[in-house]
Image (cartoon, rainbow, N blue to C red; front, side, top):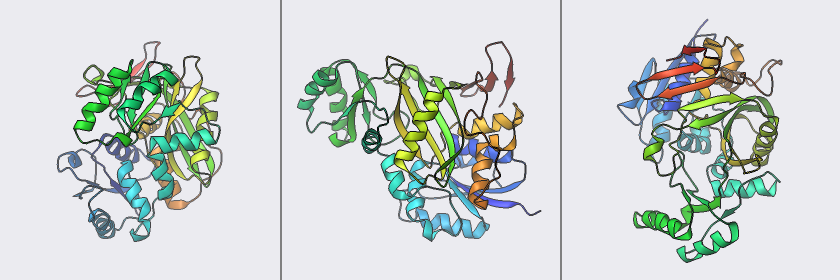
Length: 361
């Protein structure tokens, strides 16, 4: 049987490497070509062919991806970074292979935390109270209205971009003022209630408005948190799988609020308030969280779960075939109580609190 041929863009990032690794653990063999704009990081993933591309905001980016896809004869393109996914979604008609991405209008809303909050609130989904300001003089009024502490963050970007927990208007003004001096526009900032509870990620695959499968995990620690002002540096260094029907319910509502005809990967960020009530903080439409494919790899290689537990393979199969057989559980795809422990130059461990562990990488 001929190998199916796919192209992964942004393959040199952490999530891209994890995605390629998961595809390599699939039931069938794939021919995988990959791209990145870094000549260094593109060396990481296990690829049959690797190429450099311009950054996603370069006018030549889409043309270069199309040129590579044609040369390699790929049938499916997976853009891993959300920035590249948005560009390719908007110009999908120019691509010589299929993609499994939401419409660009959906992804544009999902990549804007303020617009996402508005859409979710209008649909009755629990979110943190959020404010914007037209001048730094209005920050004090926000604290009077919402209380203290408050979470200051950027509307766009990942990895806790421009985020800081501020206990006073003065601290918030200093923080915002620093970035204004560096050229960040004031309109990029939002100020939100601080939600002190668990930090949860809910990963899912959808098809034609129907949830195919999902699982959730609690983020416990981040790498190099001691040198980040917010303590958040993007992908977690310690996370554990959990089961929580409340998270399932609110995450499903969030996806449907953003995209009634959802197809592909949707990754939801949830924080609990002081009473333990889950609130949605982000909806990543069309994006794999960094460890979403790594959990899938672990599921089939270490936990010996069915093939569809490898979410990267499930997603590619959907993207290429457009259909699946039944029997896939909608929730709790991966058993609870497993920790994924990661650190730079230390590998990856799968661990349980009873002392069992296996080395993953």
